[in-house]
Image 1: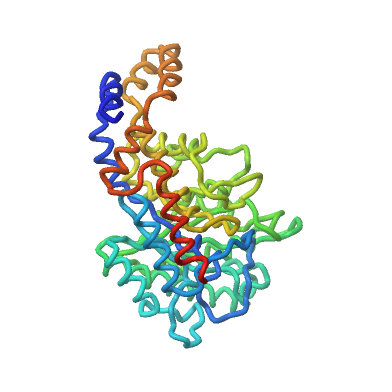
Image 2: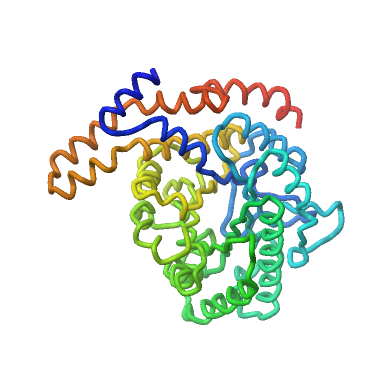
Length: 410
């Protein structure tokens, strides 16, 4: 099947061998929080807050760092290609010592760094600015309270130092993504003052240059309890990223339902050092459903592939589903993201661009429609075979066995 597909793609000017070589090198940053419903390992009774919620109570979630790492290792055995691991600040290991978030240090993530070395993974990082007493007011970096702002500024500074250490240890820069829940449930009178506080806080956080860390800022339309105004809006962060030359994070669930992130990539990419792309799936709102191979994910990766923007785009996952087997959720999301990248790479872009430049929109449309029926799945199966991971749905049997042997006993 692959040999036949190779011939068919060659007929339209696409070299599948080069595609297989390229996709194997494009890293996908896998989020640790799918495995434990975003709870982390802090010794606190503080539940999820800050516009974040998980739904479902499927058995077998990770309860300890060791269990989470074992689950991640299982996931890595079922997906091919280049992987990274994205951590949140709340996943620190303090050995029973009470260490608040503003006092976290690289040593609290040593086990994660060692795990990354063993598994040949890069690491990325996220300060955790939710689910904490100091975030109870609904405001963190934009708070009117200088003491609250200072606490979260110090947490973000500590996070950057941790990420910089990770990047140095692993020989690969860590992307550190700042997202805050700050906002109003009802219509505010003064949006400007909190945004000025946020800008000032970010300036203080990013004041010290780092050698092995890349900074990113992430916007959101709204959160639960913050429906009327989000301080860190898309416009705010796009302006800040351009002015201060940070990465700009585009989360596919953080926009209005009628917006598409794929249309934003080339409008932004030349004005910032790069884009951090969070693939998620909103269902009527930013509900962080498991990523599937839908039209927008396919279009998103195709847009990046068309202009070979992979060097300026950092691809990561951001979803959490507690209603299904968590290992399966990871595998579905990773594989769907990689499939979308492959479909984009298999497009005969040069031919399509030439037709477009000639004004031959008839042929452009016809070829694009024919592409939808091309045997990309045969190329995908070959990718799985070459990476020594299950082909097709065979991975599901592996997950079910792991559930029986491991997850069901938790």
